[in-house]
Structures are given as structure tokens and as C-alpha cells.
Image 1 (tube, helix red, strand yellow):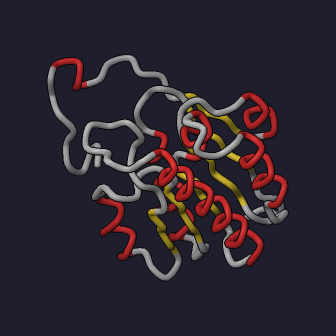
Image 2 (cartoon, rainbow, N blue to C red):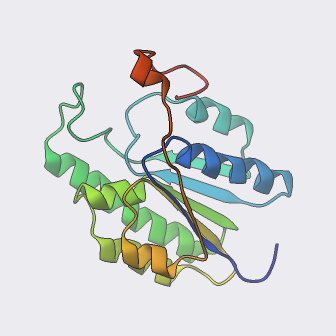
Length: 177
């Protein structure tokens, strides 16, 4: 790993942002690097990565910190619960970064958390500023704020061209969750 860590942003309305970040996890763990992923939104739903991440321990730590997607049909939490969970995730991210224990920190759906006003754009910029020199930071979620994009070293926008949902095909285990 080079001496200077990168700031990487995966954004856009297309599918694949979290999946791309998990691809980095596989590569990094293969090199013996320590990776922490904090999920800002997906806290109460079951995703395959919750189980598979256990197989990558101790190099990979996954923390599901969110309360689920705000406003989705099965979400019964008041907005304050979502905001508190997201603010705790910001604090946890800063704490984990400050520890210097991780080569890569992934903040999954952090951009979307800012779009939903669960955290502020400034919270994301503060995390970037607090990043240790050698740590790479991956920020996922649609609606990445322009100042975050400007600060990043690498930005990829996922663009939806076609999605099975358009044909009435529901989410698939192992593909979508």
C-alpha cells in the first residue's frame, strides 16, 4: 500500500456502490490489511455481508449502525432515531479513524445520510479532514455533496441504465442483499 491513503467516492443512482466498496474489502483483506465498514443506513435489515463479513475477521470489521431506510414502508422509527443513529455513526467513524488501526475505512451510505439530513455535509468533510495520512477512506451513497466530490481523489458515479425492478423482479438474495 502506498504511503498516502486515498479518498474514494462511489455515488450515483445506479446499483453497485456498496458492492464496489466490498470489492475493495476483498482485495485489501487478501493483502492482510485491516478494514472497517460502518453502514449508516442499513442497520436493521439483513444483508448477506452481515454473515460473510464474519468469515473475513479479524481483518474486516463490519458495523451496522443505521436504523434502516428513512420513509420506507416497513420503517417505523421517528426521524430523530435515524438522526441519532447517524450521529453516533459519525462519532464512531472519527473514533475508529483516530485509532490508526485501519488501513481502509468504508462509510457506507454516508452520502445518502447527508441527503436525508441525518448528518450534515460538514460532518463528512470533518471525517475526511480527520483521516490519517496512510488510511484510505471510501464514501458510498447517492447524492454525494459537491464539496465531498471536490475533495476526493477518485469519484465513480454509478448510472442506472436498466434494472430488473422495472420488470417487476424483486430484490434477489446474493445480488441485492
